[in-house]
Length: 190
Ligand SMILES: [Cu+2]
Image (cartoon, rainbow, N blue to C red; front, side, top):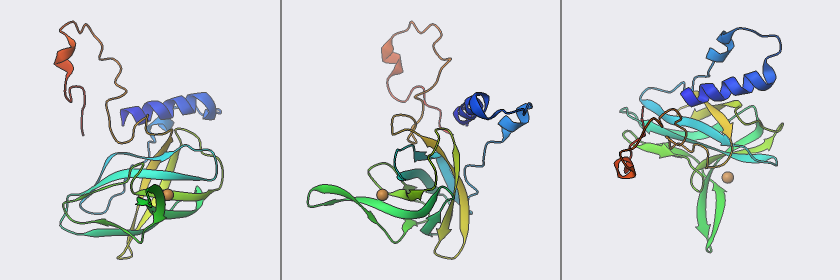
């Protein structure tokens, strides 16, 4: 969340602050997931910044509830079509292909990530901008839907659902040796 805010801040400061003054604009982080009961978004959903007219979207969604879910479609204002895709080895080559749905049974976690399941945004209506938030509607097999917000960013390097790559301000006098830092030291998971 912190990271998202800083990103938004930079964006607004850079380009979009045309006569708007208040900091209240900056508080307008979109809700990452207007989740259905039992569902929790882990980390920040993201859309890859890509040249061309299609790109992928990724998120990690946990089902902590009792109810099984199945996502059967998605749509977003940034592209004409959003498909549900998987990567699969076909004759030794990784290919993407469309799937009918994404299952999210009770107690399970649905992971959309580069090289695996993903949302495919096809026919982008205009070029994306890093830091931009994209609303995505996920539609379920029971006719219900929910909105998530994904942030546009460059490839895996940035934040693909892992965290702790960007923790500044933690560098104070660490003279006790590197071996202290083994493991998941600096990662705060919420
Ligand atoms: Cu794809």
